[in-house]
Length: 367
Image 1 (cartoon, helix red, strand yellow):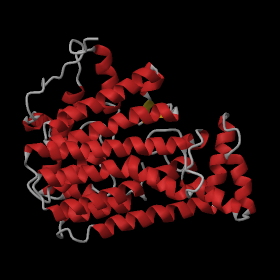
Image 2 (cartoon, helix red, strand yellow; image 1 turned 90 degrees about the vertical axis):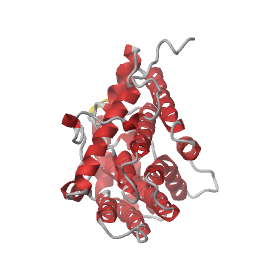
Image 3 (cartoon, one colour; image 1 turned 120 degrees about the vertical axis):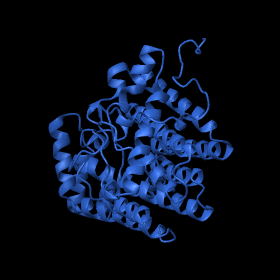
C-alpha cells in the first residue's frame, strides 16, 4: 500500500518546525487547556509567566501541525483528543525544565511536542484496552470509529512523534526509544498481572512507573537537555519526573475507583468495572486477607458483577467509605513528598517553587 499519497504533513518535514513563531494573537494558553494546579504562580510571575505562555502557544501550534493530515479520516481521528483539550502537563514540565538553562532554544518546543504526541498516542491505545467510553468529557475514539481505527491512530501519532524526535538527534531518539519500551512493557505487565512470586503492590507500582513515570521523566529530561542545563540538573528532572508521575497516576487511580471526582473524563469506577487492580483494591484485598471483616464485605461488592450502573455505584460508594481509600491517599502523598525532596539540588526560584507546588497539587486537585 502506498501510504505516502495518503499522509502528508503541513510542514513537510523541512527541519525543526518549532522555530516558527505563531501569530501574536495565539500567544496564550490554547482554548480548552487548563493550567494544572500548582502552576498558577507561574502565570503570575512577570518573567516566567509570559515566557511559558508564549512557549505553550508555540507547542499548541506545532502540535496541531504535526497531527494535520491530507487524509480526511486520519486528520479527524488524530485531532480528536487534541481538540478535546487537556492540561498538557508533560510539555509544560519540559518548558519549565528548560528554564534551568536557555529556554529560547527552538529545540525545546519541539521536544515538548514530542512528549505530548507520545502521551496522546498512549491514550488512544489505553482507551481501547480499558473499553473506556469517555476521555476528557468526549466519546473516546474507539467509540466513534471502532477499535481498529483508534489503535492505528495511536500508531500514527507514535510515528509522528518519532519523526519529530529524529530531527532532534541521537540522544533524544535514544530517550524516546527507551521511554517507548517502558510504556509498552508497563502495558504488557499490567495486562498479564503479577507473577505468582511477585507482590501485587510492587507489581502495580512498577507498572505505574513504566506507564506514567517514564514519560513524565523524559519530559523534564528533554527540556533540560535542549536548554543546555547541566547533567546534574538533567538527573534531578529525571528523578523528579518519575516520582511525580507515579504520584499523579496514584491520585488518578484513587479518584477513579472512589468516584470522588472526575479527572480524565472517564466515568468513575471504570477501573473497577474492567477489573483493573489499582491501589485501593490492592489494599482492600490485603486487609481482607488479614481478616478485616469490613474489607471482606466491600471486596465482595468490588469483585462482583458490576455490569449494571447500580451495582457499580454501590461498589464505588463502599470503597470510598472504607479506610483503604484514605490509606491510598497517604501512599500517593508519600510519592509526592519524594518528588519534592528530589528538587533539593535545583537553584531557588520560581521554577523550583512551581515544580514543588505541582507535586503537592497532584494529590489535592479538583479537576
